[in-house]
Image 1 (cartoon, rainbow, N blue to C red):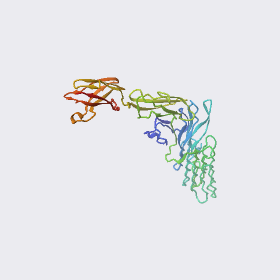
Image 2 (image 1 turned 180 degrees about the vertical axis):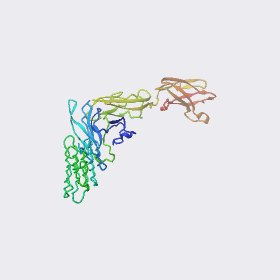
Image 3 (image 1 turned 30 degrees about the vertical axis):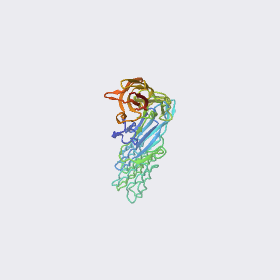
Image 4 (image 1 turned 90 degrees about the horizontal axis):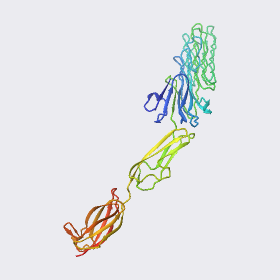
Length: 476
């Protein structure tokens, strides 16, 4: 069986994976003993593996190893990745776990060895199909415990990578030794007529299966004194050797030794630990390597002047060297000007697609504001001389619509009343504007003398123009 989670965060069933920090990571945990062929989605270049080996059988069976590592995958363009997962089984009394040793056809009270768990990524592709798999990661299984004599106690099974314990015995019988990770244990030699020499444990079987060695078989037809089976391990001769078997016909206490635990394969950069759960499994965690987008201009949240020229700057990067970029598209090509023609909030989105169809995108927002102050052109007063009852026409051009502050002040401040500046505000439009300038405003009349007309424009964005002035004269 296996359980698949869409995301790691908040899913307890996926807690065994150590790469839970990635929000887009996916995980799958396999617990059914045996081989499972797994096809990962395109874009996965690395898979994080946590493998737990099986526990040896019997009350004193050894625990398996825990191996954690990142494995690189073959990632040709457009081809899904394949990885083979093998989950070892727990040993039981008289029965070996999947890929463990020590199971026999005759009755036995010794524990069978736990099987190895591991992963084999594809390392060679031929015509789009994987042709070579490498067993790159193996978590060894624990050795099975030896069978009790009468009344002796069987030896403990060795944890993965460790030697099994010797069985208990009487003084005239050398204790049968536990199996080591590489070879079976030595059966004891007896000088007691009631005790036969012990049978040695079997060496581990190498090759594709890398099963542990069988435990030594005693002469007890009931299985007392049998040796524990060895745990499964790496395929390089490092499965656990079976424990030796021994028994005394007068039931004076000889017992079987424990099987050795299988060795593990830990890839470079990986970690080796000891299991305490007794639940063999393999957990895969992976994240498709999507392309990415980086936008420098426009910057997110930036403010640009209306009508300004700012070159777009963005780049698209592949998720991995095997997946080149197929397209990288934004509102304008990189190097061309972004849109600053209209005021307000603008959105700038860039999308990328790589050669295997993986997509990604990035979006920023920027604001265009009016940062240009209005300006006056061709301020004129016609005529320049007016009497107390007459008026002049003031004409000027504005570069944009704005409120125009108009003030009149004497050139020479000859007395307090006439020295006060007179002000009013008119609405100006873009282009030509005009208004009448009178000597009399309300109840007040400008006295005879020279005056300065001063205009300042302020647009809707609050931009303030430079002041412009012109002189005129009021006659008596």
